[in-house]
Length: 193
Image (cartoon, rainbow, N blue to C red):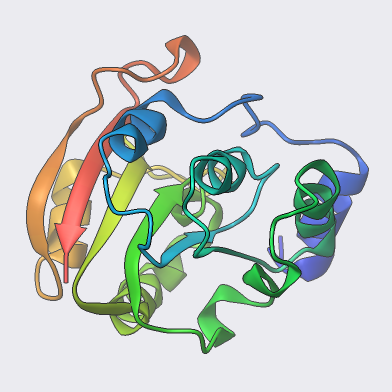
């Protein structure tokens, strides 16, 4: 299976959006709610229906950017949140975006949608996108890695090994406030460049 632009466009066209919970993920919302500096430059890779991006924007975080390889989710965000700056909706391959110096990047079901062989490149690109001291925060799945994804799983041990040379691991622990279907299957993390 090739996880390319056509694959993701087709998932949206067929409404096969198993990752779409219909609202901002509770652990992400809890983290965002404690942020005071609304001038932060924030990136969300993998738009989905844009719940997190819209929540940030509606709460004064006007430097929120979203990147997605598929056009449909970005169009959706523009339709349901018409004052979201169109120049902040980046239709591009995450690995090819050139916008940099992000203060914060939110990870929500993007990592698990990539082919596992791309994980080292993901870490390298995250490091490149964040400014010094920038934070990568979000959720990673905690279930055995298999070829049957997406979503593709992983473990705390794997993630620690993957990120530790580029990031200070401030937190990597079982999410205590996951939604019921994901309870016990998500790790909340905070990694600092």
